[in-house]
Length: 150
Image 1 (spheres, one colour):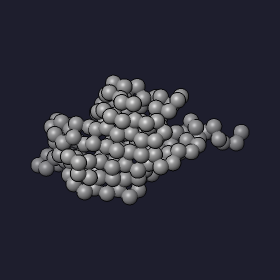
Image 2 (image 1 turned 120 degrees about the vertical axis):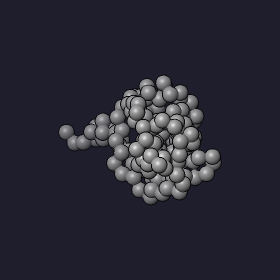
Image 3 (image 1 turned 120 degrees about the horizontal axis):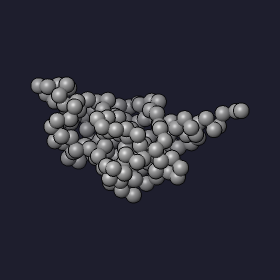
Image 4 (image 1 turned 30 degrees about the horizontal axis):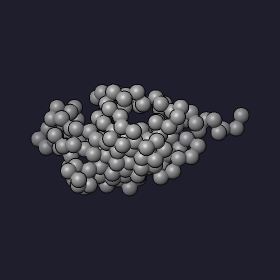
């Protein structure tokens, strides 16, 4: 499945200026999602990080991976529009700066999805060059709550 910008807004709740993905080229629910963000010169974070050497902050790179990864969960039946929370990010690596007018391509894969807990690996690329990667965990509290003893 492919998702346009407006369709992404149907599946997840981040909004401008914090929506860090523009288009999902490939989403296989429960497995993976891939897409990109076109970084414009006037992105809010370039103005403050750093004005004399603008580049995308590392944590926003991770947020982009998280948002892309969330689509592979939120496209599962009955989960559209639900809220996922990031609970951990590990093995973060940043290899190269991401600068204005780059196209930040994101690849995420679900490693495990059980009882509302999803473990992912994700990688970011610019011009087919690896610029960052991370492993991260997202949770869907609504599903987790259904497993609690009553």
